[in-house]
Image 1 (cartoon, rainbow, N blue to C red):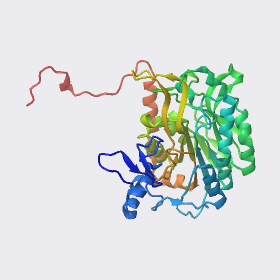
Image 2: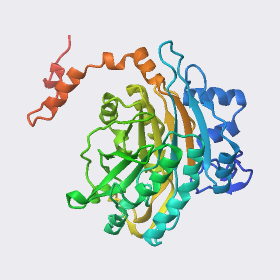
Image 3: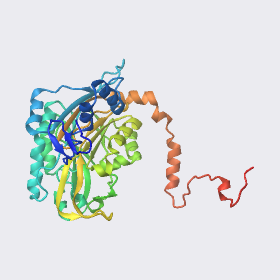
Image 4: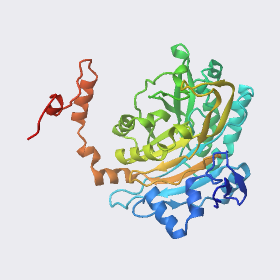
Amino acid sequence: MERREGEETVVAENGSTQENPKDGSICGFDSLHRLLQASLSPQLFQEVSRMLLGLNCGKEVEPITLQQPVKALSSKHNFDLQAFSFSADRESLRGPRIVRVGLIQNSVALPTTAPFLNQREGIFQKLIPMIDAAGSSGVNILCLQEAWTMPFAFCTREKKWCEFAEQIDGESTSFLQQFAQKYNMVIISPILERDLNHGETLWNTAVIIGNHGNIIGKHRKNHIPRVGDFNESTYYMEGNTSHPVFETAYGKIAINICYGRHHPLNWLAFGLNGAEIVFNPSATVGELSEPMWPIEARNAAIANSYFVGSINRVGTEVFPHPFTSGDGKPQHSNFGHFYGSSHFSAPDASCTPSLSRCKDGLLISDMDLNLCRQLKDKWGFRMTARYEVYSDLLARYMKQDFEPQVISDPLLHKSAQVLP
């Protein structure tokens, strides 16, 4: 990469010259990892990568070589394809418990002004080669992004977007069940749910489809944002499914949908229920959350001794009618750029490089679930936690007569005090 002082011209990853790239890239590079790799000497890049991504069992997270037909799908359909492996120490009494997990991030397929049926079908068709690539690579568990069947229209407050809502066993579930059966793969499908049994109430829901094509269950988003353009409570409220963990053929999984990643107790609850992998399907934009993105999930993986898969949609979605954020700024027609950057985090503080900030992508990771117990044994977070103390504080906090435990310096309340 080159930057000339006083100019905005950069030489991008592909060698082309760009003026202020506005596609979500970083000076023409589609991820921080690739920018650093192109800009630093191999030795310096290795050291910087160690500091940013950590070490898994004392070494860098290792890349996986995928088969050529899968790479061909990536080239033909122009999606980022990366694969890595997390290992664990060899044990005497347990064999390895290696699971292959995949994350898909994508942009919408058609403008938001297109007929809704065409928009949804366009997304279905766009995902087929990525799902096929995952299945052909032997992925056991695949997670899609939040509200993957539609544009993330919850900024608009317009109720017409409710038409995308569907039942748990609706069109998107039927679409994915065929792939679950074909590839013997568990699929997590976050959708806008319409609950016909309860007055057609809407929920932000993840459907868990088993590797035989059966519906294992669902989880509804616990925390609903009311920040910036994220006016989601116009459409649905906090979920009522608590913190379920789903025992699948490949391990115990949970889904912490989007805004729930900002709540440490939400992560904790899935861990207390025994999760080994927690997925965080999201839709978030750079100006609001990008500094938090590489931190929160990684912290959760460390604190709770499980793996985390973080998925974010990608691209800029422009809506036909401008809206405001209630912050005094001019009205606008889009959320901002959804920066992708999907990645995996491990309980030993290591993580993978992220997918592209500006294109569709499939991230694959092998993970030995034995690492979860090994890190519990090493750090003893569950053993050394003071749950009875936390429980007492929370119980008191929930009462109307709660008073914070604050001990004030008595000298602060004396108008004049001469110190000896």
